[in-house]
Length: 561
Image 1 (cartoon, helix red, strand yellow):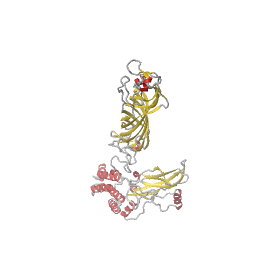
Image 2: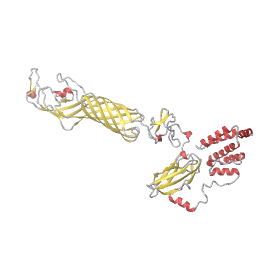
Image 3: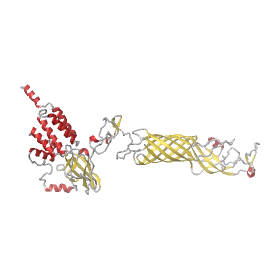
Image 4: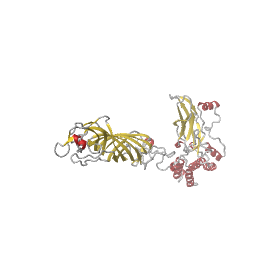
C-alpha cells in the first residue's frame, strides 16, 4: 500500500518540472521585476514548450500560462495575454493569476479568457467611497494625485506649501514591497520628492499618501492616508506624457541594469555593491557608504581616477599638478656697521658707490660705517618659478614636488678688497623641494578657496637693496684734483690711504642671504574648476651660509592632470 502511494506521488511530478521551474523563477523574479518583459516572455514560452503535453505537472504547466499572461498584459499585448490565460484554464480550470502580480488590466484579460466580465479588484477606485471622506482627504492639502506613471522612471510627487507646516513627508508602497518614507524638499511654492527607479521598475499599483508636520513634529494636514492612499498604475507604457513637477519636463526613464556600463553612476545604474564585495574598477562600490574599489574589494576609501565631476558626482582629485608663479622677496634689514670689514667678510652686506664700485671698508676714514634704520623690510629679488607636484596618497591631500626658477634684481658682484678683482657673483638659479598639505574636505576638488601649508628647502639667494646709507668717504681712487687734498699716503705705497678731512657720501647697501635655505609657508588656491586655479602664498625662509630671514610673496597659476 505504501509503495503504491509512493509510486503514485512520483508519477505526479513531471520529468521536466525542475527545468521549467528554473525558467519560471528567472522570468518572474528577475526579468519581470526589472521590466524585461521580452526576456521573461521568451523564458516562459521555452518552459511551456519543454513541458509539452506530459512533461510537467499539471498545476506547474497552468502556472506557466498564467505567468505568461501577466507578462503579456504588462507588455501591452492584451489579446495575446487573453489567449495565454485561456490556455492555462484549459490545462487547469481552477488556475488563477497570483494576487501579487494582479492588476486591473491583468484581471480584465483573465476575465475575458474565462468568458466573464468581472470588474477590477475593489481596492482600485472604490465605487461607494463616502462623499464626505473624499472631501476631507482632498481638502487637507493642495495636491494633484498621480494616477498612472511609466515603469522604470522616477515618479515626481508634489504638494503645495501650507501655512504652519515645516516638513512634508510622502509615504509610499511599491508594488509587492513595504512602505517607504521619503522627506520632500522645498520646490518653488511647494514641496516635492521623486520616488526612485528602484521602486518603480515593477508594473502594478504603487500606493502613497502625504503628511504635513509642524516644527514640533505634530501632523497639521494630509493628502490621503495609509488606509486610503492614492494609487498609481505603474505601466510599461502610458498614453501621453508622464507626471512631472510644475513647470518641469517629465523625468527621463532610467537605464535597465543590463544596459549599465561598468562603473557608471546615473539613474537606474547606481552602484550598490557593499563592503567586502568583489569589484574590478572605480564606480562599482557604494559611494553612499564611503566605499571604493581597492585591491579588488569594496573598502572604505576614495576612488582613484581622473574624473572632472562634469556629471555631478564628486570629482576625483588630480594626481599631478603643474604651476607657474612669480615671487617677490623681502629681507629683514637693520643694524649698524653694515659697510664695515666684518660685514663684508661675513657676507651679510656689501656696499656700493654711485660708480658701481664697491665701497672699500678697509681704508682708514671717518667713523661712520653705515646704519640701516626705518622699516624692517626691504624689497629684494624677483624670481620666476615652474613647479611640479604629485599627489602621493589616495586618502590624504599631501603632495610632494619641486620648484625650479631664476631670480632677477640681485646685487652686483663683490670685489676683493686687496686686488679689486671680482669676487662673488649673485647666485640666480633657484632649486627647491616642497611638501604641501591641503586643508579641509574635498581639498583638491572643491571650487573656491583651497587652503594649504607647506615645508620647503633648497638652494637660492636673496638680495635686498637699501639706498642712501650715509658713510664716511673712503680713499680709494682719490689721487688727483680736489679729492687728493682730503687723503694722503701714510704707508709709502704711493696710494692715498688716510682721510685727513673726512667727508660723507651715500652708498647702496645690499643685504645678502644664501645660498641654502629651509622654509615654511601657507596660502590658498582659488579654484575656478576642479583642476585649475590661482594660487597665493606667503613663505618665510631661513638662509644659511650668509644667514638671514626673508619673506616671499608668490602669485601663480596651477593646473592638474
